[in-house]
Image (cartoon, rainbow, N blue to C red; front, side):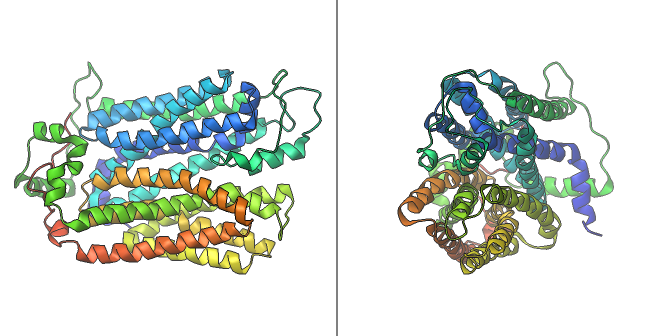
Length: 504
């Protein structure tokens, strides 16, 4: 049988909860990918310049980082987590509705900042809750979770595409931009590197004619079932004000045995619910906890965070600059042909996450991560060796997407495995990944401008080599980390342990 009976019983018991977290992550993916394709139409709606509209990207990304950090603070009770997820997913639907009515770039930036905060909370809370539910079996469920964000990120550009303007949507006498030029700007527009299109001047005065509002309203309708699903989960658990708690169905024999075993494990040195609420998320960061922790505790957090800084940064810089690399020498691809490369990358990332779901059940997270990092390194080596080949660029892009697809969930599952699934690492890793995606785009863009397009691949292989080197360091830290931290749940002076059931 593909799954063992205990895991299947656990999944059945948490079926609706798990599906809800997956659906909320779909909402995250839907919101994170629409901005790039629709940015020129949004520029028309706000009558802004290309340089001004980049602040919308910054507002969204920066607030995702803030939301990711704040999201961990809500993990002290399930009721609080679900309330935040309900509010965040509902805000995303409201943002889709409101965006077409934003007529000033500052207003649009504020709206996207609010969406970014919601997305950051979703990112951290969903990962933390799945880790708390499934612990050592979390890897496969994390892979499914990140498949849904990839699916959402793949779907939203497809929804937007029929409604994008083929010509400049601000009607004026200017003839600087034909449809092919607009397509080139759209494909080469890198969110955190506005200098990439700074030499283009588009008209800002005149009536804006665009149908992109319909795309946002369609996405709002598609996303609307997500907050409804979270509300139903809250209602089923008696967390809606005025609703009595519903008693669940009787547990099966397997589930009862698992619950009995869990209760026996928790009875020794268990803290009270009040103590857990007081310590909350930040018990991992208490100074006394750090003093009592082995030095490898902090080193593992740093090493894992830097690896994700590199891998998510690779995704951001490659998807942002592969088009610009392809249209320049030596390849000099046609604009339309080169425009398929970012879509191919994200399609292969989504496919790779789908493949990783059964693979993660058969392989340990550390093995999955080894395959991920070796595959990414091999893909960049192939890209450098075939730098003058158009088929080589497409093949290398596909392999890069497949191998880097499951790096984040594998890294998260492996780190939490080393640290005995305390949930402390999740916020750190999510935030580090977001910072890497934003910062490395800026740094690589600066290198490409000064050193030429070839440096694009050199940066990629340098980052992937560094990530693999840090993975070796992480393996050493894993072997050096005290064994009692895995076998007997390392307890920092018996305080702030994350073993108490959720407080409602």
